[in-house]
Image (cartoon, rainbow, N blue to C red; front, side):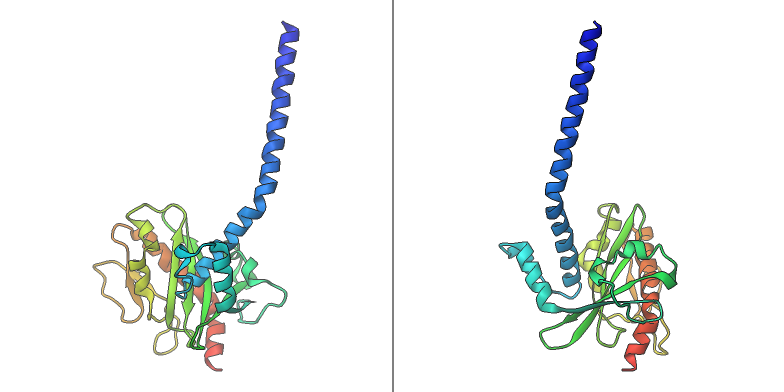
Length: 241
């Protein structure tokens, strides 16, 4: 009996080691593909915020298509600090906004991506990260050359309720932001309000929230304010140029 138990123990231990080795090897082999998928998804969202990469579904190779679109339209990227000064030696693409928003404001690295459109005009793309009802909400917002008017926005979430809060990822919600302004006439930062149906609209500075998704809508509003306020000094300085 003892011999049988020893055999079973050794056999089980051996199988555990083998399975662990197989999983570890698979993880190492798949890591480059996983990283490429993550990078491609990030580039796609950046491009989508400025209405690029619209033909991704028809592309024969989506990786090559996104890389070409990104190379064509994203002409510059850099990182600033909370005072609006450019941070040398920091790669904007590698900055994780989720981690940055956990830091004190004065320690944050704040990325900016510049899109040059076919007509030669520029849009300035800012990554965002905040909290929804059940988990993170995130995305990218693009401003026009006046550093005030919203050119476009792309929003997503991890676990908001389908048909309710998850609708922030829908085109009908996101289209409302186009043309809205984050500064008032006195150049005071007001961001964008996401209002309830009973609330009066704020001309040029508000969008309608998601029906039944009040907390997620509030999360989007708070995310916009909490992220964009870090860039205010930079925006105001650039408007003087």
